[in-house]
Image (cartoon, rainbow, N blue to C red; front, side):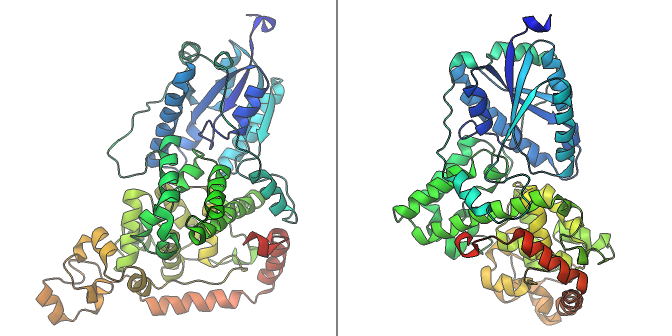
Length: 495
């Protein structure tokens, strides 16, 4: 077919924006008046990447099915293929003339950034215009944060973008099916009985509505509790990470609740965390090498001996520290932990086990259903104490267990070996005397592991090294650099 005879179209490339509403890429494509094809590509570079696991792909598949269900009313659907993006566009070009590609700017891991640079060259060579839009108030190309808050607030104050296409603007299901015949198609079936949160905007909105209606009433009181937070926290993080809902939509609902005095204090706390979410992703956008090395160059010389025995015990929840083990088993099984428990398991890994944060980052990215690179790497480095600008936090799992799971209910649920122990011992079974173990028919080292390290000794060892490093010239110089680049112009306003 001669290129002049081909229909000119747009392609909207979904990445981490799996929604129809408040999606600027879709809005811009439809505003052009050209016929628009929706596209999602399962890429081998990500399917094979060690940061991802089956739980992520199932969540994405569920999200795509939900999108297609919404598109039935328009007799349309998404072209979902397994390929690479350049090859996919090349095949589409054999039938249509792609005028514009629309997508958001992805703050992702290095392989996605390299992919986008390669895609940019492909589009230039094929005379396809690429319109990328800002995603959730994270801006590319900033040199510092002098006006970031103003940019973020301006972005968030814009009205939500509705999804109201004319039927003739979208590819019909028949047209999509014809294109699909040229590709390898992925299997979209998932395990409906899995314990993970289900993907999709429909499910995300249910979580959002129940949080603002009633679950959020205990947000502040339960936010640090490993068990109670599972209901009282919003549980929106995977829907924000994969773009089922925009941060702007959630923030506007948060503001509405505050203005109407609905759980006001709780919603003010929640709203501040939405702002800090964007803050951390913006930091990663500006310092993407954080995926591999410490933000503060002074800590890059810190060498830790890798212990596979320690790592296996930690990842499988067999360290001999009940709260750590309960958290790791719960996370592995359900994909979710609250913020404090995430900080605690990273602190234990990097301080008490004295393992490199990069090892934890890889394992946890597979476990966290809400894996968001822009939050993941900055937060792990902060908890590891390798930023230089943040307070050094070392969490005592025993004290935290007593404070936040006093009856041991969470621990007993996820470490059933301890379920029959008296509450006095559930947080620290290694304290049991031989007589007490005999009476309980429970033996430390047999029924449950002995602690693999001594908390006090390892805490002191890590603390001495990290505190001494804070005074080193390179660390101090880097502190000034980081603060100059990332301190918000109006810190009080942002917090």
